[in-house]
Length: 449
Image 1 (cartoon, rainbow, N blue to C red):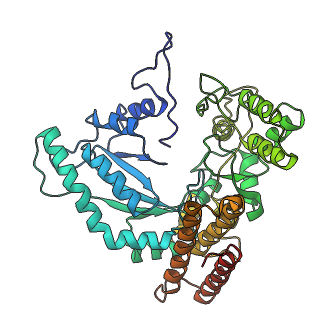
Image 2 (cartoon, rainbow, N blue to C red):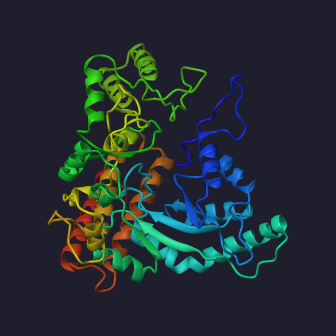
Image 3 (cartoon, rainbow, N blue to C red):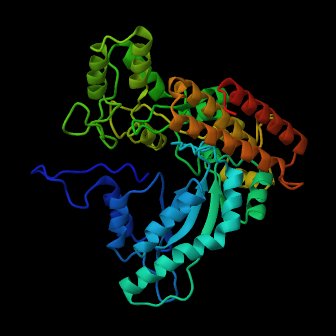
């Protein structure tokens, strides 16, 4: 994630030039011997990081317009791709792949769109692909001429790919054929493939047994971004135990997510023991109403250490201890994990992807488009409840009106998908009808005409 970019200081207390976490990690990749490879940037723009890209030649094209190292960026929609593509192109950096990811039907940190769903997003990419390439190539051509003194007549290749909640061979095939994407990404199911991912045995068992109720779109990340979270992990249990003992928060040994300066000059992490102690003391002094105090207290205590928790699973799987007294694990699968329960070999998972096997264990698993739609309906309801007192504000009201309109447009789009787009069309259409009724109910309750 490009946002995880903490500054680092030298012994004299001065910020190290080009020494931030993200820039240092990028430099490690640049100096590596990983030729004919790609680096993926996700979670928004980081001008400092991208300016550093401009200063190196590792991403310049050779005389045949081939790249030794390529840039891939995750995007949420067409507009995001165009803006970031142009930003890179102006610096003489070519984006070789735009990786479209569902805002909510994905693993890890979730960046909800304003009601824009995957199907309509892919349709826009399909119809505007050439416009996107031409728009970024004009800027890139000028930048390369200034940087390398070369005249380009043809743009380098660009791949459009997609990921987020794919679960069946039929879904995968439709995405690649109908939307003409170069490839698809299957992330979450591979958490049940020990050959592909390093998950310790205890967490692997939790993943294989997970149901929809075990997965939450939490606020546990110190980054302040929503986070798909598996309940019942050792880190979850450890966090609750510390709270019960009156010692909430993490020791914070790694400090990779230390960005808060509310109480200290040096940034600290909101999941740290230090921050939570200071923040709890602050709200205790405000004489808040009991309900408001409990609400704020819960928000503080929900934050959880990710630096150790997300890395410990791999350490335990290989019998290595990173930190002797801190071995708790947390993990961030996408909601799709609830549809898979078998721990399988890489070959078996590949067989599933290509339609030679069926690993879906949930007989009522909805189509990936329906699953995402449901996630967004739940998210909309949650947001309306949390913002209820502010709904008279015109800006906020217009935001929700636009959000509802985008969901409504997506439902119409899915209703008009061509025959053969989904396997069980009757069930698919029935779910769309339910969503349409639910959206109408929301509009009525909150008086959105």
